[in-house]
Length: 228
Image (cartoon, rainbow, N blue to C red; front, top):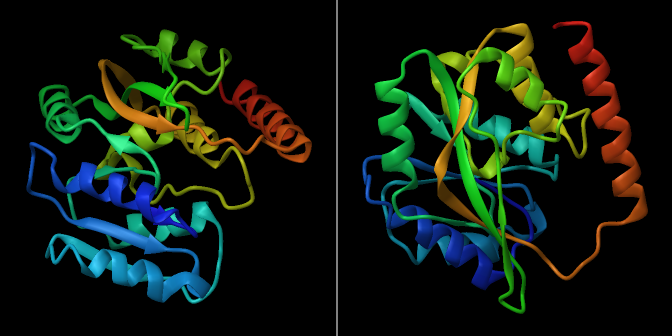
């Protein structure tokens, strides 16, 4: 779980949702990508006194892609679950996703459905496609990003040496999913059940971010078309 200048309440909600999973046997890697805020975040995490937590400080702010990669490099488990520092996991997420991957060894990663929620407590369901064939999975990449990154669990052997590309500032997750599917023929899908509560913030996405997302999406889709 990469962390960057996180609101304390949001961070605690995210951490609690991991530590109270019904599947309790895991290592919880927290990568702090805000070195100027290191002591405050470290103090919050120390209060948990849970030996499953592994603290990984970054010497400088390097962005979410590199912070995520640092966690992946340190992970020792058969499965790697992604998580954002301000979202909330459903308590059975790990249990359900591990069971799915164990029962379906030809799948390399799995996400799930999400509930987007706002500071005023309004919410909306975020629906992600459940692909049962390679053709369905590949088509889903042209209908938007087919996976919500903080809901995804990877099989470590499927990731192998693949990592998030830090040259993508907005769409590093979309790029990684595309390379898994179109270059390495790794199968993925989304469970029909809710896996995550995804936090929306009041702050509006800037025009520059929208333009960057559009540019990066177009670039990745051009790459996909050459690898179908």
